[in-house]
Length: 278
Ligand code: PEP
Ligand code: MN
Image (tube, rainbow, N blue to C red; front, side, top):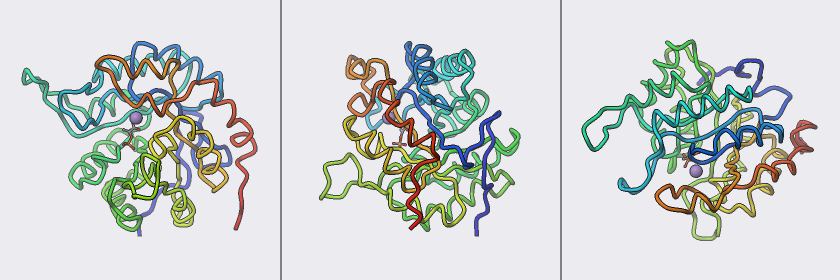
C-alpha cells in the first residue's frame, strides 16, 4: 500500500483541499512567458507551468530552452507571485557538443513542483532518483503523470519508488491513455480513473490538453474532470498559440488555448467543482 499526503502545500497554496487548482501556461517556455504569467494569473491560475526540457519524438526537433528556460520560468513566476511547475525529462542529457546537463537536479533547484511526464515517468531508476533527490530537497512536491501504457494498479505501485525515501508529497495527473482506434482525441480519455485514484487517497489533477490534443475540446474536458472530482486541471495556455506552429519551436500549438478562455472555468473552480457524489 503506497501512502501519500492527503494535501500538498506549495507556499500558501494547498493542493488536494477544498479549493480546486488551476495550473496554466505554455507547453514550452518561450520569450512570451512573462506576459503569459500575468495573463493566466489574472484569470485565477494558481500555478504557472512551462516545459524547459521537452520530451520530443524527433531528436532533431526543438528540445526546450533547458537551463535558460528554467530561469525564465522561475523569473516569470516570481514576478507575478505564482509557484512554477516544469518537467524533469530524465536524470541528465548531453548536448551535441558533449556538454552534460543535470536535468533532474536543475529542475529541483528552480521548480516548486517537479513534473514527471508520460514518456519518462515509468522508469524505475529515474523514479528512484526523483524520490531520493526531492526528499533531500525538503520533500519537494512531485506531479507524476500517468505513464503511457501502464495500468492504474501499475501506476499506483510505481508511486512507491517516489515515496520510498520519505517524500509523500505526490500529486497524480491523468493525461489520457494510449490512443484507441475509436476516438478522434489525441489520446483516449482516462477521466473515469479520477474516482478510482481519489478513492485510494490520491490527489488527482487532470490534463485536458494532452488528452484531447484539440483546443476546441480543452475547456469542456476540464469542466467534466472537475465535475468528476479532480482536485484541479493543468491546461496548456499561450497568448499566441499559433506562434507555436512556427519555425523550430513547434510544440503543441493545436491544443493550447488563450488565457482569456480560462475564465470559462471560474464557476467550476470557485464552487469547488460540481461533485456528482455517485
Ligand atoms: C507536458 O505536460 O508538457 C507533457 C509533455 O505532457 P505528457 O508528458 O503528458 O505528454
Ligand atoms: Mn505539450
